[in-house]
Length: 149
Image (tube, rainbow, N blue to C red):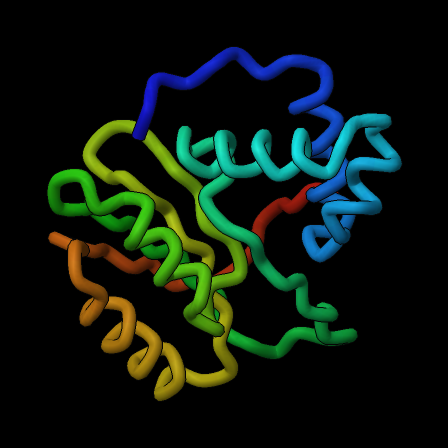
């Protein structure tokens, strides 16, 4: 990973557009930003190389009523495998959100599944990801307070 450059206004606008629609075409992004396609391509490559953008994801429609199980998984990573491990975790269907954190753990994954059996299978798949040193999982038993989104 190269030394990060400070994000300028164009970088910030580009990231905002990608957050709205990560599948937006380079041509459309260039038009909306008022820059060339080459500029958008070069900035995206730099943001990826510097680890500012670590991947692109698909947002799934939330179920109208969730009767599933939710859990937090704290994850410790071996060495410098954070980008590869993160990319693998973002491909795991049970992972609803993934957070980088400080302290003892490197990542915090929010998991959602329908049954304990599904949770068991998801945990097995996650633990097989190369570069994960240790995990600890806590099941949500009850939500005492949650902010409205």
